[in-house]
Image (cartoon, rainbow, N blue to C red; front, top):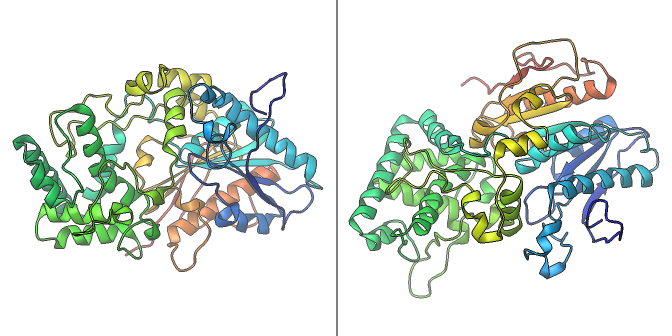
Length: 467
């Protein structure tokens, strides 16, 4: 349905994937809510497929309205007039209707319990669904959800910085020096040299705020995505195996800090390098993210302007800024939403209160797993506290910390050749918590790993193996 409670019953086509191969009567519905991606996620590529086989469940994915092929107005969907139907209330209603559809059309599913799962923005959605429709969504797994990035947060940039510092102080020092060198070139107006040193297709325009912001965040974004998705070498250029160690080693071995920065930019953005007929390929710094990251920027900008006001502004105390301090709200979508969509972004606190995802709400939540990864900068703005009390109620919320884990890595399908033990342990914890919910008890048939613990309203840590 196009609009919640629409008496005219206007409809549109919304893409979904449903797999009931291993479903047994009354088994759970493992529902993955797609996020801001340009294509729908097949649940068979996620760990949910393995779990469905083990516990007799079915897997399902619903594409987010206005993303991928689920466009209510086809090629005309991305207009301000037509975006008025892209609301959080409608997104929630889509999911509710989808669960009703499954229960009505899959034999034996009428009494099945739905566990909603999402990653990143979708991780935030999964908790919102559970908090606002607890009768529909029996439980939720919120993977790498940025619950505390709303408003004035500057934590993500700082976390990126700290990640590299923890990996190698020497590499971090070279990264810091590289950004200092860039700052000097910007201050002297030597943009042609900057373009040459960093293989840019054109010199960056850093004389105005918009140009400075674009270029600055492109530089920082390389370090962000390379640690977030260190477990996905296929996303990047000229790497194999875990990405972050490659970046660290290249940074240490490069002939200069700027050469190290250039190599990092090629790893991050080289897959989209621009071919030059009479010379070497170059990098386009105006493209915010590599195409491999799979983000639909236009509809997601509407989402950010209306109910997910993510703020990635760089803390001036950090190493990343390359010129005069950027405006504190430089990455706060509310700063540009009036010009872009003629909307005023509600305060983050108001949004969290309205949809029951304020800190007090999440600490009191039931049947929600909040999982985060050590190498994921989003962890700095995720739900990192649930209180210290360890009770006896198996339905209280649980936080799982994945040592050495990336952005939603525990959600990926099991890969015996690539998964390290901490990721396997995290999945065991998460599955056993869900089994406990479904069975109404804290215990499940498979014991938790001995190095981990999960209690009511508590945290569980999946530890990396010792060196």
